[in-house]
Image 1 (cartoon, helix red, strand yellow):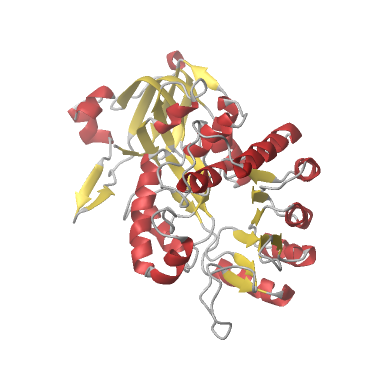
Image 2: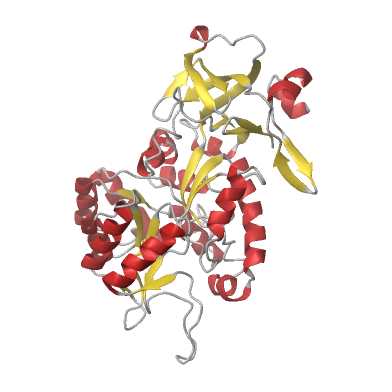
Length: 435
């Protein structure tokens, strides 16, 4: 109740309009109001997805934003609840563009152990907790880029959150993801055995066409492909699919209104993905100025996944801010600067799952540490990600008619990006979740 009082909410207001996390059978679950609630949110400032607005308020009716603008111009109707967010910044729910809800940190269990040894039911149970932590951290939408051996479990998680069986973000699914036969992992076994893979193997246009359509049938919202991987003669990263094969993938997915995202880190793997029409490239560790210029020219978005490299390096004992940057960290800084200098649309995608779910804002902190302005990092995690997902008319901005996915953070994140880690208020689809 002390938290509710800090938001300026009375007990009557709570009973009328706020849906708190109710515990049913040991599982936190929000109850749904019988009639659309009307809530006036009065923060110190509003980040609307592009700019910081001082003295704004936001009116929510049901699950939509009904009004947003200067407080003096917004009047709450009779019976509305006013929530005062003193000293806080109200902003769109953040979007995580590269998540793996079915993975947990690699310093707890290696990727191979998770894929080969952990039962799928165990992984789903973990993912339920991961999803709640993600939502409570202010990330109301995630693009989950592959179940990594857990089949189509992301589709079930998406349904559970949509039905409010369990609290979690909106989920954009890619199901099993695509790899070229022989390129992915786990590896190192007797060649007589076919080992279960962390993604779905394909080879050739006919196989690609069949698998794209099958993944769509089973619930994929996007198609994810590994455009390169560590399968060279000496284990080096080399391109996987040909440019022609990638074009087939894009064409088949595009005919259904779906987009393709590529894991790519080599210049040639990135180039093939760009020329094939893939809309988003993630990682890009060895991108070049020429490749980033091509991305800019073709309008391809970039998710740098800075936090993944930061995390895996720290697992080997490196301490950011204390120890000198490793060659890998130096290289990541350099490629991120190349992308900034080229004017590429940078989106916020962290590869969370490699590190702890709920610590997603680590990516924004690193973007700023690597040279991006705090305001640009906020855009990357909200309106830029929404445009990349083609969801700009649903989420990612504080704008009339959009879904009421809103959060409040303590302080001003445009001045101090670490404020994105101090989430005090979360609303998703008009439902308020309290920490």
